[in-house]
Image (tube, rainbow, N blue to C red; front, side, top):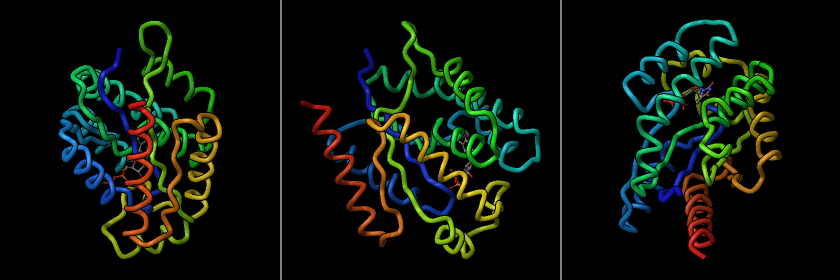
Length: 213
Ligand code: TYD
């Protein structure tokens, strides 16, 4: 049995999730929980090397999807599964829904092939799939996200994509939510920082209360 808590945070680039993940981590620490704050692609030395490649080098769509899942496999085996077995709270900045949204929605890569890779990489003994128990999805109009990103740093391979790419990524997230509605919580990320923070904290607290009963 899994003892820990597994939460992922998703959304298009510029949706503003990073600030809020740090706040959720604080919420768990205040409740006395050990927190593993991690990200994808990345989270282990090897997966971080793969991240460098996928975020900065042009490549074939299947290669890109395979590298995302390769990084994920390593992350699961080395970090996520041991943390969940210890009973920690794992807070992951992006997980598999990002692959469906970006490679599936954004790049138009075959959804069924991604589902096959997901089964290979996240399969558990007995046939279940390792998935986040809760996925906090920061949903935002791509035009607003683009305005927010314009004033930020030098864009990586994904961040420099046009608005219609992000519209397709957003549809990818919506499709994942429709397929697995029970673990998704949609946040309206167009609101002010404080209003978004309040939504996130409510969603996480309500979910923890439900889990405890
Ligand atoms: P991001 O999480 O936005 O990190 P930062 O805030 O440091 O830029 O960057 C990761 C990028 O990788 C983001 O553009 C989405 C992309 N990505 C995929 O395309 N597929 C995936 O499976 C994952 C996990 C991320």
